[in-house]
Image (tube, rainbow, N blue to C red; front, side, top):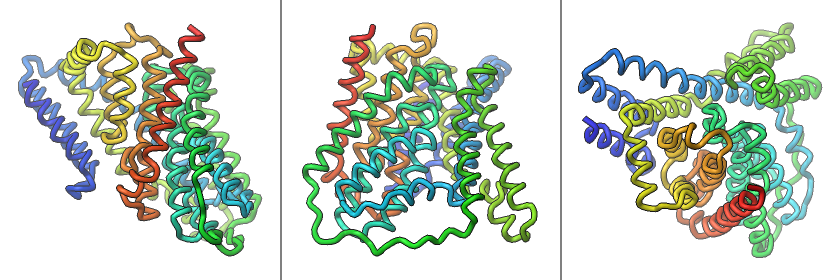
Length: 425
């Protein structure tokens, strides 16, 4: 039984990793892999009732992540529909390419901590496409956006799916991950930023003509939706701290508040306008396949955890490599090739919270490595894959121009985290 389950999981994992080569959406693969693992487990179990209980138990934990992501994506989509992010991006007016590089990188870093790295990358690349004409310089800036978005997502419970998973699973606390990972994550961006600042040599004028304001909504409506949406996202950690309820409850409460405000803003407008700016329309536009992908892969990981395969694998890794920090560091590098969601989900199943309690070194370092490691290849993160499509960036171009500087940042940030940990403990 266990051999067949592992075989199904490995084949599914490979199909997910090779999504762009085999042209099969990873969501379909993840869902099939997840269900088939449980089918094999159920058909070979002596107590099917126990299998159902285990599935129900895991599904409760998985649902927390799914509803959290659903709420967050809808809030961000609603704010974006009202041009809320233009409040930030319109402030960038510099005509110096190196100043623009620093502004975009730092803005991306902090925005992705509140929104998420995927949304932030899309917003910032859309901005760069308006500011810069198509050129090698713009591609390098886009590569920097990927590094900055992933670095910014790593130190916040809201910024990256893997960090969110660790927060919801109680492996890290909101304040713990912010205080311990802010500096290492910043270093993982600053090192590539300095390197690119020193080596970037733009040819000719790369700036587009002056941007025009094409906002369809009054500033008051746009500003209100931005403030309410941002407030709803920032309220989630506060809600969890005060009520001790799961984070997804705070996110759903925030979604309800943003939804209500959007309804009140447009209640006297025509039906077409109401529909365009409604939460229902936003729900149609969110990345539902990604949510189903997380569901499928987490269900598959739960099956391996229920049959204790992950614990056996953790013991094997400890005996083979010995050093826990090295194991996590390698997981981070692997996340550039293999999706970091199943990697972190598997790690959460491998290591027990009793042995490694909340805010242990293992979990904090895992959040950093899995969050920033994906920047080393353009297919290594959701942000990278999104901008790859937007800018038609070639895999080999990114590998030659960006991968090395991303690796420098990753190693530098990891060294800073380990140094800080040894100094403070």
